[in-house]
Image (cartoon, rainbow, N blue to C red; front, top):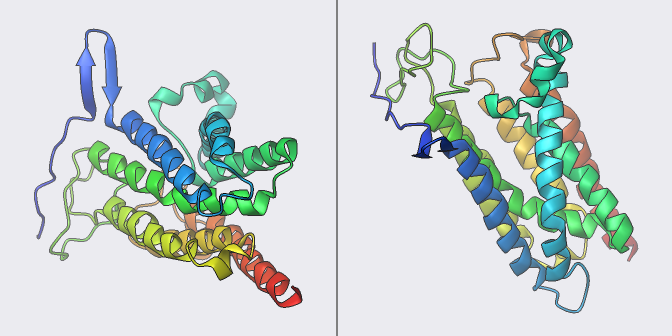
Length: 269
């Protein structure tokens, strides 16, 4: 049986008396702050048009609320609804964990739509910049999952880089799928979008970069789900697919539509 030692890191980054700061919270903080700063830089690529850096200063709070509220509601609805129907007050206890990326994305998209409607900004142009920064938060979030030893992979007894995670009741070597996701959804997708959004021809196709994000994330998530252990309360669903794979299919379809829409608009222009 092959396995490399799991690098045990205390999930608590800092504890001062009753105040406890966890790496997971710091991951969210890093994602929001670095993403906000990155959006400010991207907004300056076209200084004579909206959205402006000031718009992203104002949007930060909207993004935080949309991500956390949407992520929690998504987890409750998609991943553990029977439990929360019986224990509705537990749905408010976000400090116990339980966030859905797909729900968080819906929350952010809703925030973008409302914010842009109030400001008179194209949600497609605004969404392209937000999409370009999203992999930053995904990267830090997956690293935090790894530190917590949660959302680990499927058993892989013959894989040279398998790990035994402390929270695994079976204590068998597993794929470090959190790191796979950090590499694909985080680093690789960030590089792809960083290149795309700096191409003037693509910036003139509103929604294209956002579509590339949805396509890239969906394909990455679908692929990694083949190595990731399904949530125990759900297991495998339709045709052996996982909830993460099924939720990624509509994202993939919307992403393709956005890219094709941007291409059509460029042709008509």
